[in-house]
Image (cartoon, rainbow, N blue to C red):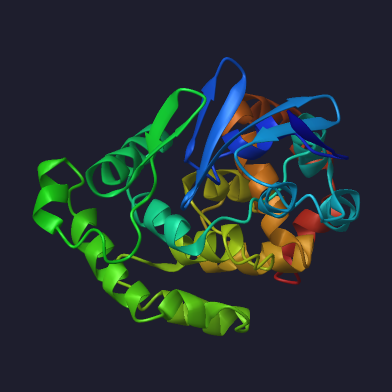
Length: 296
């Protein structure tokens, strides 16, 4: 089986951090979808073994060409983000297929990871193509134009999201996802938000996880909790203010900071609250005072 030598890469953290939903772990081997590609990967130390795809695809998909130590150094600015990095070092932002990522995050509205995963599997089973590798079978995400059946999706409990998937499909066929590539971030965000069912958080997830806009900072329930808890003294603030602060504080790779904070918060919220209660007033006082004064 072929392998790639990697540095600063953790396959488990990268696939299981919540940025991507189309994978299954079977006996410590991950079977992964990306549009029509279906491949498996597993990691032993610095060796990343793969089958069903070529090495260049694997490197690009997992962003193995990025200088992760440099990226981390740009946003590793306080003890909380440092702990997130220590626990989940090697997590990289995946370069997902834009259509698959769009469908995934439209389905994420008012949902959770198990349900999103199931909804994606249902859409793929209903409209996609069967694929197999080493006796493991699954279904690829249907291409734009292969769905067009809101009623059938609703019958399979996809609910109100069904109409948004159909609308997104029509706009994808018109080329909207191709036009986004290379646009300035705000223009790209405005354009993708013209797709029904895509508000700012979903737009930012798609732009970060498939187009590589590292200046995005998607704010969901978990990010809202940790940002207000750590950087706004527990006070409720608008998501816009959270994004503005995060962009100025964490810098050009704020999208990476978001993903480390997200997985840290999901898995260690009680620990974060414990640290805050004991040490909050003595940690990075300049940062918190600047937040309160509106200087960051």
